Image (cartoon, rainbow, N blue to C red; front, side, top):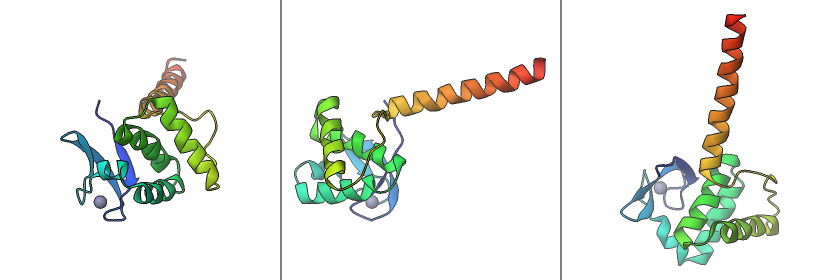
Length: 124
Ligand SMILES: [Zn+2]
C-alpha cells in the first residue's frame, strides 16, 4: 500500500514526506532512515514527542511508523503510543482513526456526502 505520511524528521528537523524505500522508511528530503529508531529508544521517544505535539497529521505518522519500524501488532503499537502520549501530557483524541486507511476512508466518505449534496441541489 502506498501511503502519504508526513513527519517531523529527526535528521533534518523539517516536516517532510516519509517514503518506503527498500524495506525501510526514509525522509524524502535527507534520506534519514526511520528504521534506526527501532533500536535507538531516546531518539525514537524524542521523535515521537515532537510529532505527537505537532497535530493530527504527524500524530498519524507516529501511530503508523511506530508500528511498522518495530513490527508490532496494530493494537499493541497503538496502545504503546497512546500510553506514551498520555505520560507526556499529550491527549490523543479518543475514537480517532489509528490507521491511514481509516483516514483516507473518512476523507473519501466526506467527499461522497458533499458531492451527493451538490448533485441533489442541482437536480432539484
Ligand atoms: Zn529529513
